[in-house]
Amino acid sequence: MSESQFLEQVRASQGIIYKLVGLYAADAEEKKDLYQEVLLQAWKGWPSFRGEAKFSTWLYRICLNTILTQKRKNSLVDYKESLESISPSVQHSSIQREDGVNLQKAIRRLAETDRAIISMHLDGYENTEIADMLGISANHVAVKLHRCKQQLANLLKQ
Amino acid sequence: MSIEQNWKQLDEQGDDDLSKLLQPGKVEKLHSSNPLYKIKNYLIISMIWAVLIAGIYVYVLIRFPYWPVLLCIGTVLLFTLWAGYTSWKQYISINPSVTGHSLLMEMEKHYAGIQNWMKVQMKAAIFVYPVAAAGGFMIGGMVGSGKSIAEFLSKPAVVISLIVTVAILVPLCIWLAKWMFKKSFGKHLVSLKQNIDALKEMG
View 1 (cartoon, one colour):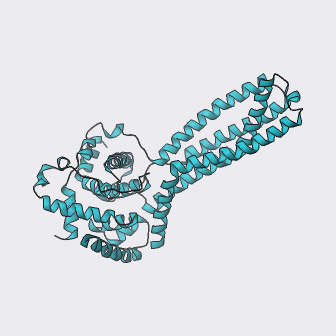
View 2 (cartoon, chains in turn orange, blue):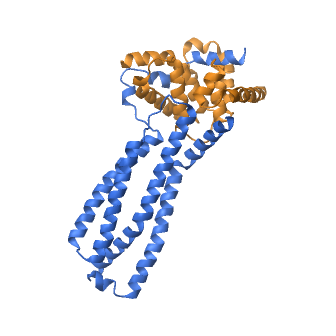
View 3 (cartoon, chains in turn orange, purple):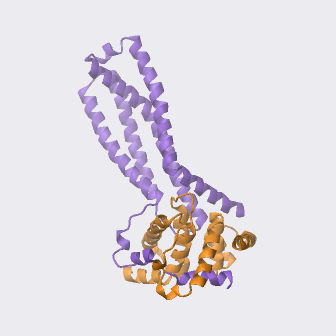
């Protein structure tokens, strides 16, 4: 499989990388490092991707596994995203964007494993899929998810 | 707007840093900074050093054919070869690539890989450091004083100095090795362990 096919697939699902890295990177520099590492790991794992699951689901796993096993800085700061780095098509909807950024900031304040659970839930994964990706039992995902949502609601009220 | 919609809306945002990487020819040039990749690199360096040092020991054995030197350096040589072999075994056992397995399995694999590396380094240190310190002391003393090894070690003060040197240097080197490991991987291991425990608590 060619590099262009790989890039095409990643481009179509790049929102996954953007959002997940945004939840864990301590600062802008670390964000760049994590992008590189996720892309490299996905590229290396690409030959083993057999298409049994959707590419986006596979990329989600690679992304989470890479980020959480990567050596990262301990302190998270709310680094600024410059307006130039955001595509012009969405600059007009700055209020919506702000809501999204505020949500991302709130999720960043949760525990690392809780961030993974809530992001998978918000991306529409079923509890069984979340359990499978994390390696835990599905029964506990619902309970944990309920707590995460409550915590998130409180954070968003602040 | 609901939380789900706000989250989805983030999908539409791009990032220049990410877009720049998604160009042909870029991905293949990337280098991994994954801790297990780094450990694999350290292991290659360890193996190269083991071979070089073994070569030096062989030269010393030929150049100074005195029984205490032969005993100490011969022992260190064996341990060096053993350390090189264990580095090789560990090198081939580490798979630094991130897989599509569950997050828990992946984190456990990384945690175990880093811990095992440290254990092997410590094991090697406990065996190699004392003999290396004693060998270094004797060769240094012999060359410095211009005496044979038997003459050099004939004074009780020298033997006491040798024991004191080994007793100070060995724990100091082990402590330094532990400190360097903690400095390099300590926080990362703590964070990995916390996340592993958090997932295990969930069931």
